[in-house]
Image (tube, rainbow over all chains, first blue to last red; front, side, top):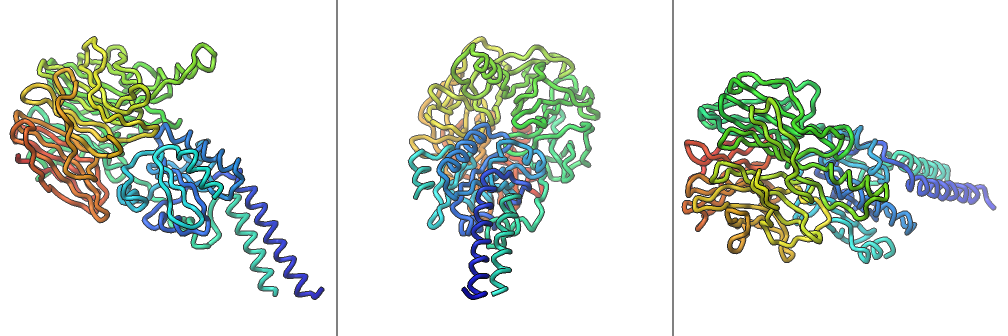
Length: 163
Length: 406
């Protein structure tokens, strides 16, 4: 075995182990920051190499949202898929500390708050969205996002998690 | 070769960084690129407005620094007196969407201002009030309106004086939902408690003291504003989004103080396990009964609809969709036979302020384009003033006060 081949194999091993650790850590890591969901964010998410993504749009007074976040997190965990769960708290700006401390949001891999005109941001996500929450976008690895008001139907979720 | 090794280690490190923090560092064109900019704190634009007995337009809201202010205008928004900051100590004020500060004028120079104060625990709040006995020249320190002091939901208040000068406060309250959950945990009860409840109380001295908290209805929707309108008898009627069996988020109606069960006021049959964040509007009709506007989904079609209600709150005739499929957060006002419904509508570029106006008590309506803005903006508020109907619309840059002529 040449020195070059040896180093290449080592490099691939490092990548593999790093990926495994990252995957394992992602499943339990809580967001350490609240990120701005600005005018460009939806477009970035929709074409991100992070896909597949389950994105829950929530508000601080949405009483239905915690259960939907929890059920999605549970479904993702049980499916062992590489889907990442993101939560966007539409009215969360200025409340970052409270959001980070909120146990409901700790199940997400990423936590965002609207940064700008809520109507315009909603429109960018989906012009048909009338502001109801929880609003769930299931973004597959390839293809268009599917939108659901409230918990996604079981069949749609299964199909998304195990395409 | 060495470059590949370095790149591989860098990749693994980036992956670990993301996993540990849930963000940052990967630079793959992914969703955290926006994180380079800090999250900007927002100040809610939602305002309350009312016309004083002297005919001045008063406005209460948060200024750019997030401080509660009150301001008045003698010419309906052409010019404004200097804004006055109100001393509310360390209170926080919800002024976003369905939550907004409110102001109401009563007899004997009484003025009250209310707001919901969000508490540290999620989904909780309390209704706070400031009062004035000198026509708004000075205000008291804030106090809590309800007797229940649990750290639970007391939010989305509405308030108004009736014709007899009694001050009524109505709000969304979760004490019964919390109690039901507790009883479930103790094994004394099974089954959930749908939604929240609507509670109210009364003050006969302009907010100096309040009577007991009185339950108006079980099973309201949790996060929609409550509409109030005067009754012909001088009392107040309320309309709110309700959770009807088995799980229909339609609307209910009740006259405050009447010992009657709430009446179902809309029949969209919207089955939903979500928060619409979209409460109704209510105004008295000249021919009796009420004009009502609400958002809902009927047979799969989401729309803001207008309907007539009887004096008891039951629907009369078919509800009509507003002539704008993107209409949201409509308000309604009436003065005699003049009726106006105003709403906002976003088209992807700008928000339009539009109105549907009637000169014959709602028999016929005409569409009016009132204003537009590319700025962030509040829901429109309608007012009946001695000078006619007005719509008030706050954008990030200004407050529009516009006449509506049917």
